[in-house]
Image 1 (cartoon, rainbow, N blue to C red):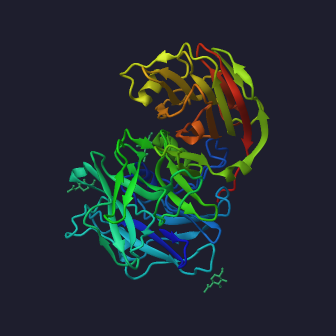
Image 2 (cartoon, rainbow, N blue to C red):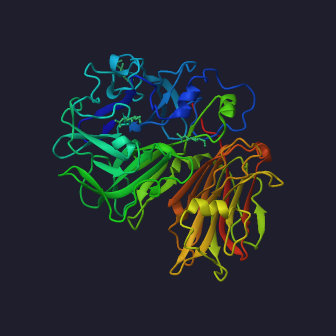
Image 3 (cartoon, rainbow, N blue to C red):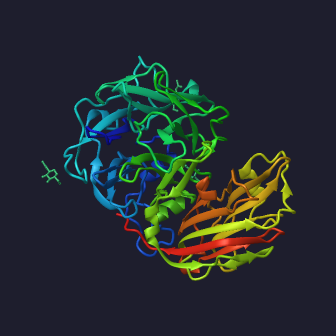
Length: 554
Ligand SMILES: *[C@@H]1O[C@H](CO)[C@@H](O)[C@H](O)[C@H]1NC(C)=O
Ligand SMILES: *[C@@H]1O[C@H](CO)[C@@H](O)[C@H](O)[C@H]1NC(C)=O
Ligand SMILES: *[C@@H]1O[C@H](CO)[C@@H](O)[C@H](O)[C@H]1NC(C)=O
């Protein structure tokens, strides 16, 4: 999809289709559920259904954009899911990115290059659809020009036909050629890559000799995303803007590990090559948008507010049997604005401002000390659907634990030192979706360590007790966070919505999304606590909690 805000108006939707299997063939669980999920949601109360996270019965993230002040979300959806389906591109619109109205299906398969069922070939191609009526702000009707498919694997280009999907937003360079990147892998999957295509008219595309970028040992790159970010600015930047004070971000969703990793680097438009900054790590131990459940994300530039907005898909962590009972699978994370941080070394993310319109009934517990080994309840807010912001100040750092040089993997460190393991400074943070007797809770917390030359801040999302249901995936998540525990305060913001928790550490430097299904801590039986299980007290300089209203979602 491309959206050009300067001069000529272009709204295109480039989409990957496979003629052998369903869209996103690699998303095994999604495909498995497609065969079973035709029935509507079961009647009765559903404690895990989200109140303000986008969630149709079944869905998959894809493109989003803004056009004549209306936000559009396109997502893959199987309307008649009893068979391994031909998913369509469903369409919802919004004027505030929070409340969504359903629209007619935007694109369904109808032409040879997007009909699936061509025998055993698993042939992925890129097609084009354009809005029929550009005066319609809701872009209700889409047409497919006769030229499709625009890009396809052939014997000549030697592209593996089952690893050729998920086009980026196209960008236009001063040479008046459009560029687009497609996810791919080579060498039996050892080399993940972003194939580059160029076009003068958006119809005829030629593959560049070299990819935009590749990295060995990373496996298939799904949902690549490539965009500019301003250095030292609070604004986002249009995908086609190049020039000084701009760095580039390349993101890929790693099919092998289901993580969205990114690098920051430079785009040489003369060579048409992207190079990550020196010292960048690529692959599973590199920087990630989110260190929890978060995948297949895409960004778009919202020129009405000069923001780049990130939309990600959040997987379930329930068993297939439970998924079938719920009859839905996957939600969208809260849209986030995304910017380069002040040192240019990583991105920072923050929930879009509009989500704050759902806040109500604020409560304030600022200025409290939490003694060592204690917790305080954050009262009255509806703890199952809430937004909390808490800042901690560390008064003493004398009993900070030393880091063992072997502890290089933050996720393992968080699992070893879960929330109930006493530390020196920390663990301190929040116990969310907690039952009264703490049989169930999801803990989001910090722990401070000392290395020979500095302090290290670990951020964990401890999920081992989120539910008494033994069949859930309760993997704990964690990350080191680039924050200064001595001079600054440590801020944690968490958005809680029944079965999802999105946590933003240190003003959005590191994010962790968790999918949880408590059996006791549901609805009014969910509680929220601030806790400190370290041996030193910590000060809560600010704690504000809100109940969150329900958004209108389709
Ligand atoms: C295009 O959309 C506009 C705005 O909704 C509408 O007034 C007009 O009738 C539409 N044109 C056609 C040909 O449908
Ligand atoms: C092409 O991709 C498929 C799916 O990942 C893989 O099974 C196959 O080995 C690949 N073929 C080659 C020649 O790399
Ligand atoms: C979704 O989560 C399940 C269970 O935790 C995991 O096995 C699977 O690989 C995940 N799939 C994706 C696409 O993230």
